[in-house]
Image 1 (cartoon, rainbow, N blue to C red):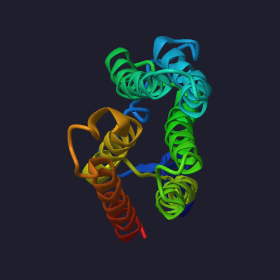
Image 2: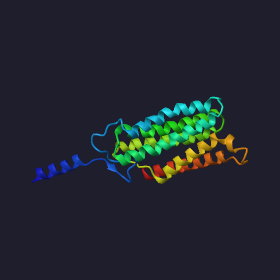
Image 3: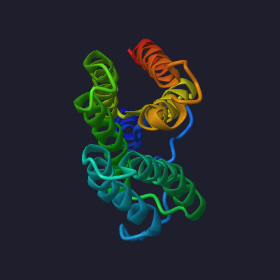
Image 4: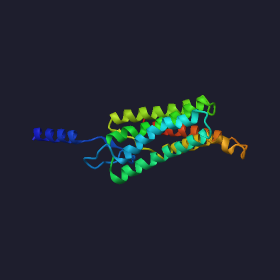
Length: 210
């Protein structure tokens, strides 16, 4: 009887899997078996990565309408971020490759934009340091919790943070377009708001998942 009881305890321990707390994120939904990594969501993610140097080329080179072209490329890249997740959930085409590439593509896009805008003198260096520091800190937290078997889903504050960063970057890039019409520094205000949401959402992650 004692041996049987020990066997059942070991069996339950062996079969217990990682804990998933909260809602599953777009790349953490159970995928259908046998899903190829070369699917449409992953292709869109890779496409977003390839758009990063194109975006930087238009933004940093002094070609005519370069900032408008850069803003257009950035918008397309940001849209693919939402589209690949929707398709992955809809078609159950979630893969380990996509789980790795998706957040990498997001961080490459935001990092390239902030570094380029700092180079152009349109964004203060401390703003980029705060935003990128938060991103890598939360990424480290996710990695630590993943080792413990806990998957941290994206929260509402995190999504608002991402949206605010995208809007702020676009407004800063297109400053020459609307500045003659509006005397207010809308791009700067949007970027400061993005910094606040970035810090608050980061603190919320560490408070909840400490």
